[in-house]
Length: 192
Image (tube, rainbow, N blue to C red; front, side, top):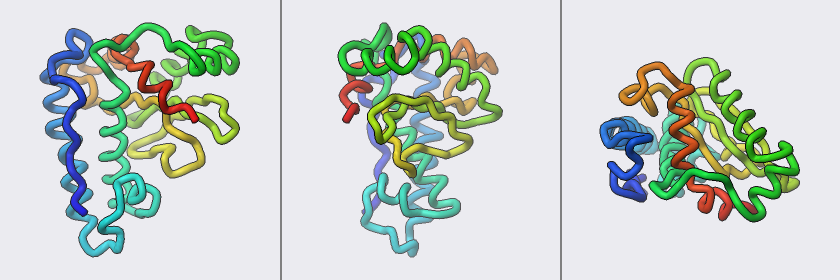
């Protein structure tokens, strides 16, 4: 089974002014596409052909594991964003974040702190722990909580290509923009 590059779930210019169409073209059309193509090349002869991408991420080792994880994480990232995003979460997600962090503001501050503190490239995730509580996980490189027991709810790509065209090296500015397009409805729908 060939892994396909998923289409963006919205037109490429609809996250503007927070994330530009040029950034999405480069990020989705070049970086994400490159991980999908590399995964397909490395998949040949691996014994994992025919598996869904999530299962490849869980079973693969070495470079195939890295490329497949990046392909999956990027596809997941796009589903965390929306032109109608931003604001605060509601319902059970908001309640769980308030119980765990005190309130949404404190959660957001901690998530942002971890994203700014991640040395180099990687991802920051809101996850649901096996006991149902929310947590924040920072992973380096292509690391993903998909390979552990946590359920990913929200991903923030903090690789430079996610923001360089719009903001150069200003990761903090990118994070401010990120919060304005988070699709809290999609994030909340992932709760188990």
